[in-house]
Image 1 (tube, rainbow, N blue to C red):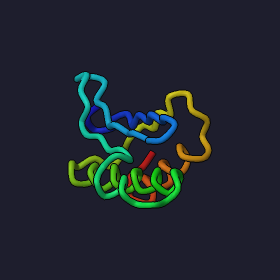
Image 2: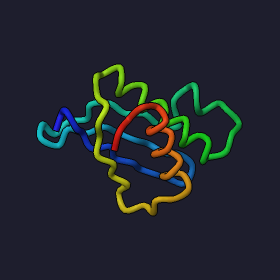
Image 3: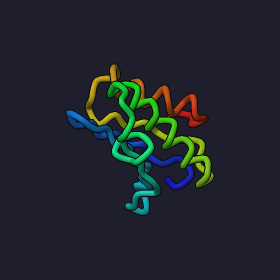
Length: 96
C-alpha cells in the first residue's frame, strides 16, 4: 500500500537499484541507485556503495513521509550487497 510500500531491490554485476512501489496503485513512489551522482563517482567497494544507496533511499522515504516498508530481495540471497543495502536503509530510519 502507499502507507507500507514494497522496497524492491535489483542487483546487476556493477550497480544496485532500489524502488519503493505501491502495488495497489501500480506505481513507483521513489527510487535510488548506485548510479546517482554522489555515489557513482566515489572509489569505494560495491558493498559500501550499496550501504550508501540504502541510506539514500531511507532519506528520500523520510522526505516523502514513508517510514515502514516491506523488503523484497527479488530472489537474491540476503548477504553481501543486498544485506548492506538493507542495513543502510535500517540505519537511515526505515522499518521492515
